[in-house]
Amino acid sequence: MKIANTLSILGIAAIGALFAGCKADGDNQGLEYAPQMYHSVAYEPLTQITDDTRGSWLSTREDEKGEFFNSNPYNPNGMNMREPVAGTVPRNKNGYLPHRLKQFQLEEAALIENPIELNDEVLKEGEVLFQQYCVACHGPNGEGDGKVGEILGGVANLKGGAYINLPEGHIFHVITTGKGRMGAHGSQITPERRWKIVHYVKQVIQKQ
Image (cartoon, rainbow, N blue to C red; front, top):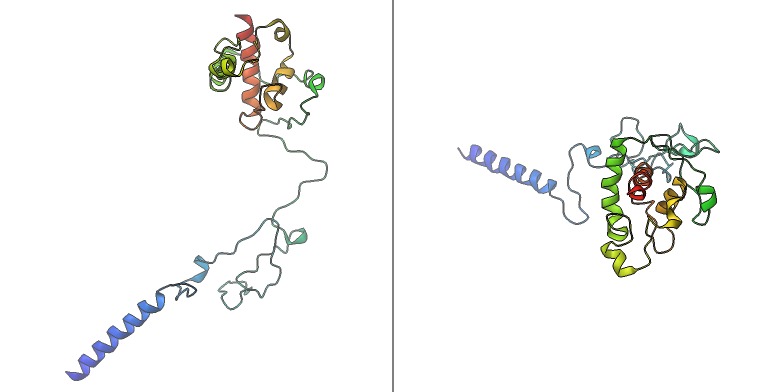
């Protein structure tokens, strides 16, 4: 009977010690089951740890490398990110090149043609986008009488004589880079949406 009680006490003590060992506090990480689940190998795109013994004291990796070794031996410079081919430029999912003209390059911008095919659906989308981004300053009819436009003053009347004959590329460029009181919207509106707004301005606003 005494032996059974002693074994029970020892068993409880062992279980208590096991739970105590799993407790993490401060710098003590405690005992970890499958530590690689907690300390996964992080492959940085640029900075690499090339010393394959770093973190060997902690490692459970199958390749027997240190836990913190994260260099890619198959790519140049040990990087995981591959550099683009020299001279290439990024295109978006629709194949558009980035708009890189400077704010003052209006004449060059005027030569750019609208790549979005004009149809009723595009005009409807352009109307929604115009209401979201343009009405506050330009007003619902593009006459520069929006709530913000009334406060600021000097907002363009898109139906004014100077604006009626502006090329679509010019309008797109101004939306993108800004001009005068108008701020740049290139970071807020995707190129496709900017072109749809241009269609709406040219085909609806300026023909009302």
